[in-house]
Amino acid sequence: MKIVTVVGARPQFIKMAPVSKELRKTFEEIIIHTGQHYDYEMNKIFFDELKIPEPDYHLGVGSGSHGYQTGEMLKKIEEVLMEEQPDLVMVFGDTNTTLAGALTAAKLHISVAHVEAGLRSFDRRMPEEINRVLTDHCSDILFCPTETSIENLKREGIVEGAHLTGDVMVDALKEHIWIAERESGILDEFGLEPGGYYLATIHRAENTDDFNRLKNIVDAFCEIENLVLPCHPRTEKYLKKYGLWAELTEHVKVIKPVGYLYMLMLEKNAGKILTDSGGVQKEAYILKVPCITLRENTEWVETVEDGWNVLVGSDKEAIVKMANGFDPDNQQKNVFGEGKASKEVRRILNVGAGG
Image (cartoon, rainbow, N blue to C red; front, side, top):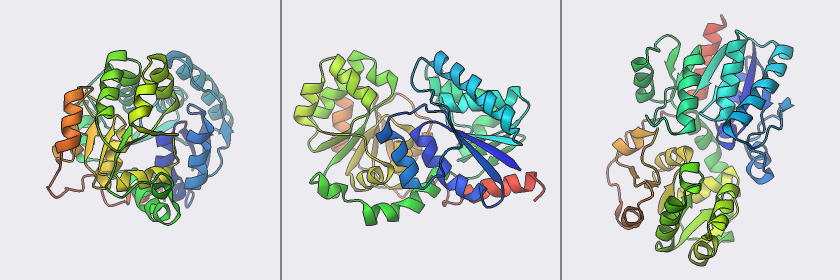
């Protein structure tokens, strides 16, 4: 069976790494990289660190409005699929790349498999939520990371083809954390002590593009001692546009974006994590680090229900209060599985292919 994997953003590279390794034991895999994330430091380094095979096709779509970006991807992915004639197209997560890959394949009557299916924040203002819902309803095989994601699909009438696999990011983290511990010297590089600093990330448009929300978050960050912020280029652009850069850099240790292994070490050794990233929320949970989420909702509701994640939005007082006082003391329920999701994905595809 020939499988075309479509990726384009950093979280997808991480999810793809263990799955691709498993797929290539049995199937032929072709990789399309849409180029949704195009900055070298935030792109190629992930392929290098995760030892992902070089993409067979690089579409170079780059940034743009949602409509422009998705439309360009649809056109270019279609050309590749018509040439390759795969049996299956595999997509990951909830980006414009995810939707474009799934929709193009569905229009060409090619089976679609969605890794990380069934997530819902129930906030249709989020472009990621639209991408998730549409991708799931285009997909023939849905690989769900949690029981909650299975239930979400059932409520939308999707039962056939849905499989509970566990989360492939657990696979990736377990495979790479020991490499990070052996090779990463980022704590020494920035003079950080394990447990002695807060780690923050912020990149979602709902926070970066809104002056009031961004200012509230910056004001909160400036009141939290020993805060480290690997700064997304888009976030830096808006911080400077809104005149918040000088204030932030005066009080916060702002560093450039880091690769996957460095990020794992920063997460693992942080006292707490403040983020608006879905992936970082999940990694914080897996690494047993308390997480403060700078959003009003989350697709990873299990982390909140289990007491290791708290939603604060952009409320300055809530952010500072939780940074100082949020301290989970309960045993985790291990909701994302044991790190065998990629093997389960391959097993399910193998059964479907008659293997």
